[in-house]
Amino acid sequence: MPNITVTRRQNALALFQEFAAQQLAAGEPAKGMEQAFAAALEISPSMWSQVKASRPISDKLARQIESHTKKPAGWLDTEQAVPIANAAEERFVELARSAWRAANAGKKRELMRVMRDESKR
Image (cartoon, rainbow, N blue to C red):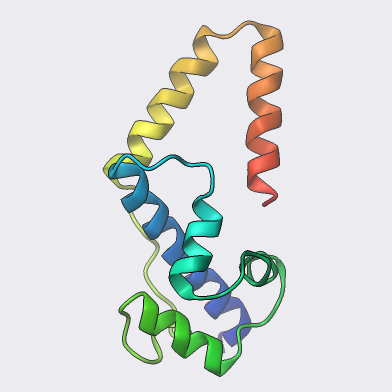
């Protein structure tokens, strides 16, 4: 039996990925994407950070997230299919690969540090 806390968090993270991909494809900068997503959900950036890390998503918050992302009620509670990479994500990966290949050892360490820092947010 699936754990609803884990399912809701995975689905919320998938919604963020979808939001970020749309924003990046529209030319929006990556910086501030987390705050923009929180604003779109009408929650504080701190609340979004807690949800990503470990805070359980209450029924009320789940329905709020679904409403603001135009998903049907109960969508967050159901395991969703793994999203397929989209064009914006593929462009990013290719850009990252090019930057990595062109970088010297010092720049590679810096790229790794930036990516690790971003993945912890």
